Amino acid sequence: MPSNPSRLNSCRFEGCTLTGALTVTTSVRDSVTVVHGPAGCAHHNFSLLHSTGLDHDCITVPHILSSGLLDTEIIFGGEKALGQAIESAVSRRPKSVFVLSTCIAETIGDDVTAVCGSGWDVPVIPIPTAGFLGGSFQAGVNNALTTIAGMAQPCRNDGGINIIGEKNLEYEVEQNYAEVVRLLSLLGLPVNLRFIHNITTAEIMGVGKASLNILRDEGVAGVGERLFRQCGTPFIPAFPTGLLGTIAFLDRIADACGVQSRAAVLEEMALQESMLDDFSDIAGSCIAVDHLMNGCHEYSFIHDVNEALHIRVKPEGTRVPLPESAPVGTAGLRRMLHRWRRAIHA
Image 1 (spheres, helix red, strand yellow):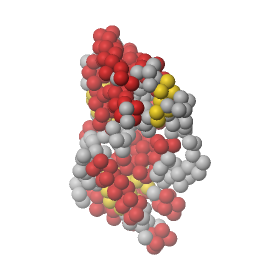
Image 2 (tube, helix red, strand yellow):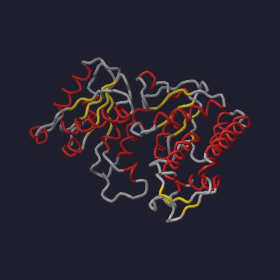
Image 3 (cartoon, helix red, strand yellow):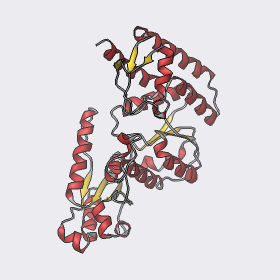
Image 4 (cartoon, rainbow, N blue to C red):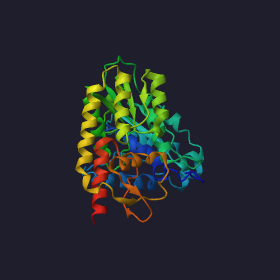
């Protein structure tokens, strides 16, 4: 973990590198993830992922094993324990195995790559996830996505769109995905793959089939660049935010894919106008927002909405809740305005 993290977007970037990677690898349904380190590293993250799944009304049991390093392995080396853990994982007949290192394993110098390359019956992919030298949750996500992207095979473009780097612990992950799918449908464009969210090992191989990659946000730009170099797939750097940002998103997608956007833009503008009419009862209100968020470029969408509804921001105004991440598209703004309405009319 970083010793001096920036406060900007800290809710997104702080946290364990291992946890970030696990949010990716455990979303490959037919894989097993081996955590090379003390059992507590695996147990803590298993509990987190399981409880998050329950919050999403999805009862899941993450496929996680631990090499269970004890004092003896920490002193004399844990490569034998790692080999035994991989053997146990392979015996479950997964289509792939991901091996995540921990701070302890990196400190004692175990050659994780060599153990993973020992001729197993299925692909065994090592992913560096020790955060003690300055890693972060987001670094773990990026390391996992970038490494797994290396499994992709050259494919012929089929016109589909990849969604890259969704935040699998995000409470509104499915709503955000649904909004992007809705916007793509206005342009007549299908989704090829969610990389990586609830997919299989075989599907990973086809990530290069898409004509365009849409990144969740700029935090996974390195993954977009890796896939561009490897597969030649261009990318859009982030999901849409704000009224004008959503319209601009449609135009950018259309330009990248060589389709017309006029009809889609007109339909979306009409939807936005209708949505704003639905919240006419809070037009002209006076609100207060968290001062830590004020002026942050990620929250520029607030000015967009406030201008449309003539909402004023003043210290004495009604305090309204702000999402941790900017709401995605028109649907995300609607959910946010519902929360604002409850606060204003409370």
